[in-house]
Image (cartoon, rainbow, N blue to C red; front, side, top):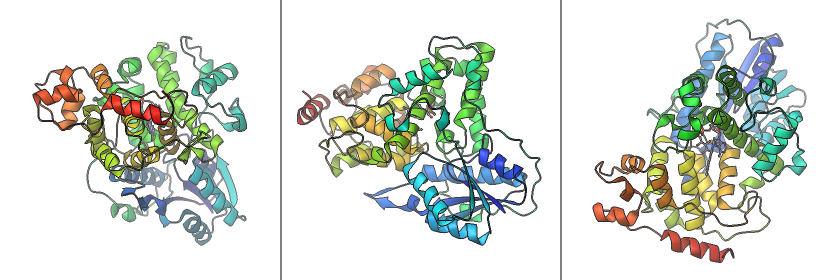
Length: 473
Ligand code: FAD
């Protein structure tokens, strides 16, 4: 008996374990472990909040439906990954397991523990979470570059990847290939889908996006395959309010409903038809950021999750619950930060621009323990991804790859610059439409027009204090 173990790869396209299993012959089972760690709680935070949970359930439902069409049923087991997975393998008399590797610290440990516990089982492990395979990477993990630019330049020197201001040649298309193998014929099974356990876990509300491969591929079509969107991405990506300001592919990429290689190939296809411009290149550039953090997480072996991050020295961090709660609830008095946190709490999403601002405010103005912020994002973000989340947080907190100076975002100036009409804050903070744009992000100006609370700290003063305590000015 063969089994596909689905983990963070809830799709059938570009899925080597699926192709290998069905082409290996014999009967096939599929399994997903609902990890009991997702229910863990600390500091009043869960590992997985309601929006993330809903998306995962929808993704599993979609996967079960797709597998059903190929005559494969998906079983969901719940508990400690090592224990429940090994019991299931014994119970089902599984001889071959086909599974994707994942660069996450816990994910890698889980896989190696189950493999060690089941040495008689034949393990077939494929790479599938990143754009590049390990053997393609032009750097050793032991000497992994501690800067994104150096990583990108190495790729550009060694591989024919897209480059800024270089026209599309066609050769780029071959660098990153989807998994190979024949897709089987569909042969639906007669038995009902065993998804009752999922129904009981439903949070019971509707999200801003639907989980699953079907919805992910649909978004790829409506965004990347639409020249009006793809070829204007660079101009719109910093927008705060509108859904189509950026690709929103992160939900499906993070949950493995969409393969990064499929996204890459779709960009290449569009460039082959229409030519490359700054925007189509830039979407690839952002995928490279994702790629960088995945390999960085693997290379640094869990250090991204430590308070000291990748730095060799401890910084001063405050376990200040009062400031942390005000930040979480969107009650700092700074409209950009507050609107962004309300959006996150309501929808499970926040734009990249807003994420940078709220992370900077928590770590550089409030000096609150950056791991708390990262943990809160882990709970709330539908697109939570260990490498991208902890990597970006460490970077914002100044404990990432380097910290020569303390560069903080000015959360008043950023609001005015990226949303001059104040539409984002008006929407999420229910401010009057009639307010002139320039007052919306400035708490003092805003107080002259509406009732508005005092800020919890003064932006300039708090930054001066932080710099001083870190010996940076
Ligand atoms: P687009 O702008 O359309 O970008 C396309 C894709 O490129 C994204 O879907 C994503 O996969 C990748 N990408 C873009 N920017 C980044 C980046 N800075 N780092 C890594 N990948 C990137 N992204 C996550 O996917 N999961 C997270 O948990 C996460 N946490 C973050 C925490 C902080 C503090 C910050 C500053 C950023 C974080 N990001 C995270 C990165 C980024 O904010 C999101 O990927 C992006 O906002 C998702 O929206 P989009 O798909 O429309 O992005």
